[in-house]
Image (cartoon, rainbow, N blue to C red; front, side):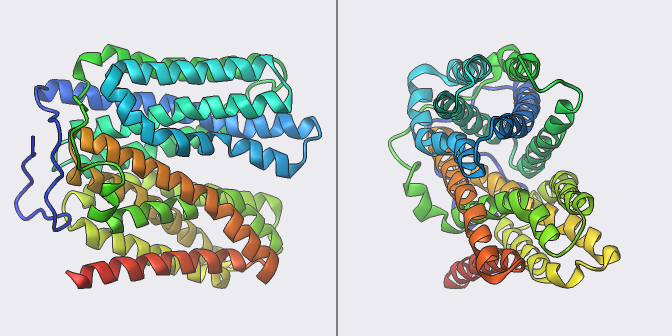
Length: 403
């Protein structure tokens, strides 16, 4: 089924890739499905927002090296990269809700194991298992959201999706401040959060879309159909993760105090939360290719100006807020465009590739920016992000002119 687009709406100069339709759902069912996906996402965001720092702190207390802590923390991303392209096939075989509930059960099982077995070797395996379940939830929830949203509000829901994920990741560490870190207590809270993520999905199970995989139009072929979109999502993963991992260190190496360096990241994350709904609303009303390039241009400007405003708080805080919001906006706008370009099973396959490429960018970001900081000094951080965003603008601009 190809949804109608509002008058004058032209996201990219290609029609959607058709696959098995997502029809048969009433407007009320679609709304219930959207609410269920967003509620499930918020619970999942709290889960991973709490677990990432918790596990790092527990490994640090055991005297594990920072290198091994970093490698251990990368296991869920590695699992997501390896698992994401298999998810559409599993959905075709078992259905949306059973696959999604199984993914949540795998995450719960992984965290039970993490609480019970405290050896580093076991944690590598168990965090990989958590990543398998995370991949299933990530791919299916985004595909469900894009399938259930209308053409004229898909961007807004993509913005809400990204904002709620940011709220979960920001709120998770706050949860840890209320709990003892030893024993089962923090793990039981995390397990409870991820178990709650399954409740709205089960309640809205009759509103799940049909994501039967068609003969073509998804998977790797999506790269040929939407190279600008997938370049944007790789850049989003790279810049997002580099910022989360290294922005405080960048501030510290410039002589900024620890508290102020942490506030720098908090302001950027606040922008990433607050600005997503407005950017998503805007994505429903303008050409999304132009908006993607505009967001990338603002991101480039923010990275380039960062070294110049570090000593000027009146300029630094607004810049970080805007920069964090616009860089996160690459994900929001690209996710909305994915739903406009692909449908049904083709959307599930394209979304799996979307998630995989974002994770590849996420794995690349901290290592590239960190190496640049070691080689060139603190401003290597801003330089790498500026270069990556500039390359995205060159590729996106060239694709636009080539048409």
